[in-house]
Image 1 (cartoon, rainbow, N blue to C red):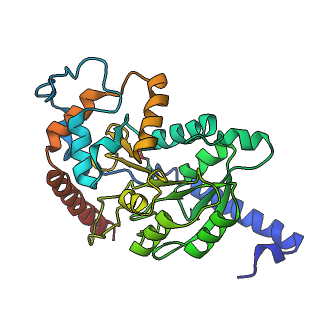
Image 2: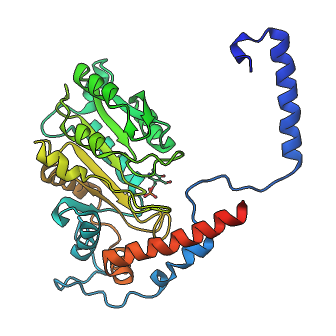
Length: 327
Ligand SMILES: Cc1ncc(COP(=O)(O)O)c(C=O)c1O
């Protein structure tokens, strides 16, 4: 097909009228299609209905009454459960509210306002007419890009290959340009192609030399245990960053939005201990604590990491049935 840029004015007018007719025909069908992706079917949500039953016992193992204020970083039982699931020390995890995206927005806002590890706040650079830039593997998650747009962060598209972002380009840009402050990563089953990052890509992200010392990886492992056809291993980026002397390079996000209830699950961030201390300081001005009863409900419902993985197998079974039905 001829590129649109090569169309004459008459050809463009004809195309516009043809497309308008097609659009009207589609509108006339009055279809009520929900085009949102990432929404589980009701049969999948039913698997988590046990969460809607009452909390069995609201006294935590350390004697804290979960109905009351407190425990900014989330209840120890919940940090332990997800720590074991993701192989991250519970002390490096903060359980947030119902949304990991919310935590991503907050953390980038903190970096814009306060900076990190003694570096200047990112907004300082922006107001000194030095842009703040993020590497954005494409195709990527649109809401990551919306966060950048909202905060005035310049986005640099990076081609996403079969095993992750084009690392030669990533390494060149982070080394050459100190205004590159971050990269978005969806390391497993990234939409729409289902790209999973290889060991080498994770190692390079953790070890690469960066011009900016407050360069950060935003590791959105939203589909971290969502292996429908085959289990894909993922190198532990927290450990890898530590191993290469960059323990605070990564913010690792995870949530149960696509495990229990979307928008009514629990979200978390994990990072190096200095980042966690910094985050807790900012968070302590923001909230007294998140919903501990929901955290406790998740702990009492799932109990073990093995049960969470088993739950995902059941979800995947329904997914396969639904896919076959639509074929
Ligand atoms: C890659 C990715 N990250 C984050 C989210 C949002 O997760 P949460 O509900 O925890 O905010 C989604 C939701 O579709 C997603 O696809």
